[in-house]
View (cartoon, rainbow, N blue to C red):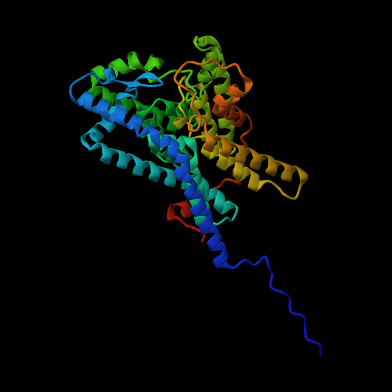
Length: 427
């Protein structure tokens, strides 16, 4: 009786050791690239954090908080511009040695990056049966490579604290109908004005109770600051809030808002307020309409991402470190691409298009607009088409994503809350 043929071992069956080795090499290679990306940003030397600390010392010495001013090579002069409630939280840091304060800010920022990245990518990795520890490690390294993260860390900004508050609220508390839903958004809005756009998001999404809680939280925090520092609070809300010249030149390339784009087109003159206001209202209307549609479809991540992009566009000043919202946009694009039906021609085209947009967005936000470019210290009118695109890359990318960011079906974005809470991870 002839012997049965023996099938050769399948080359598709990869050994676990080799797969692990390749993953380790990938993670180490990405980690090795980070120092090159951060080298240019190290010139910041925690500049903004030092302004906060010196302003707190100035305030503690009995001077008016908003009288503090620091000369700047590019902007001319910089002031303490945060609301009084932020000053209350920052003031204890002035009691620490500068090195300790810097270390605390960096550690807290890195922790915020890990936590928020986990919230964003673990549900996607689970849905598409991808290795979670490896996927999360790669995602964290890529987030650290993004210019907004680099600027946040090397300037000593508080942006990741705000992102943690907003994501915890809008990804978990609000969708789950928790009683404290809205508190995170309210606290973030009391600390910095930019997150106030998420109050409008809650209203557009008809989350009335959460919107009321957010507004009440922001008001309570503001009144607390007013009770502690009444004169500084009155001055901020009646005068300093409206003085955009206190936060820097609007035409500087680092200002990636619609107003910044218009300012670079009209420099050295200021752009007209009416055209900017009409454009901002149009963008806000489109973006919040799409965000509300996303919430009704069950896609909270797309909804808050669209809202963050709107906030960046319509604010008069949007520095590069404010633009975290490209990161969840990439997550939404990749998730929607992986969910596309590969059995149809339309599905394959959709998959390729979304992955191309995700990759293109990634390249833009890693290379950035200020890290590797020296835009000088003077006011320069933008009239060259290439210069226009390069100097307004984030503005143009935000407008594109506002129009085409996919809204996923609620059944495709369901999150297993038990797994998230327990930290279930596929090896």
